Length: 59
Image (tube, rainbow, N blue to C red; front, side, top):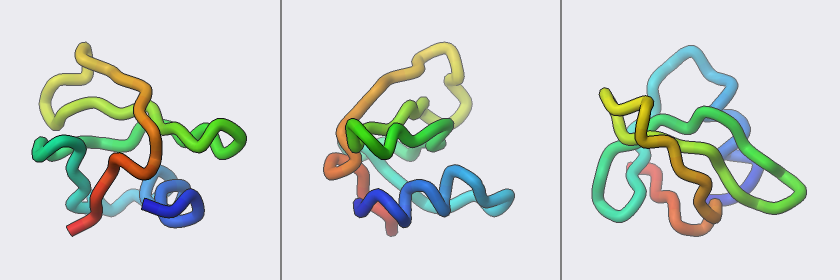
């Protein structure tokens, strides 16, 4: 996923269909400088991860 689109999704009130390694996730925050995102699986905010933007897929 490109950086600009990830930022748009993270700032949007509308939930986007984004996956990381096949699981649906919520993008909490984007670190544009490092090109990473803080994410968590839907319904599991306690399982927060920092992942590279290029590992995210929008459907």
